[in-house]
Length: 62
Image 1 (spheres, helix red, strand yellow):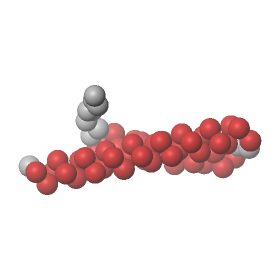
Image 2: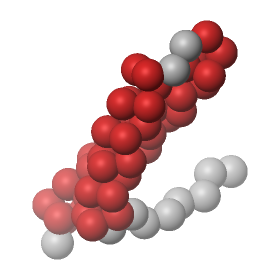
Image 3: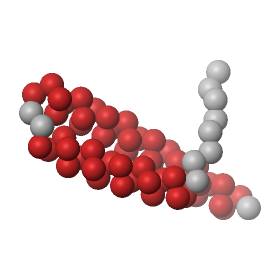
Image 4: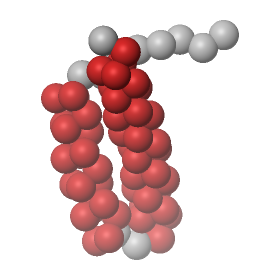
C-alpha cells in the first residue's frame, strides 16, 4: 500500500536548493562520505521529479 503526500511548488523549490547544496558538498568530499552524499542527491532528484510531475498533472486537471 502506498501513501501519498502533497509537496507544494515552494517546497519543490526548497528541495532543488537543497540538492544544489548537497551536490556541492558531495563534490568536496571523498570516499564513503562522497558516495553517501551522491546517493542522497539521487534520491532528492527522484523526489523532485515526482513532485513536479504530480504538480503538473494536478494543475492540468484543475
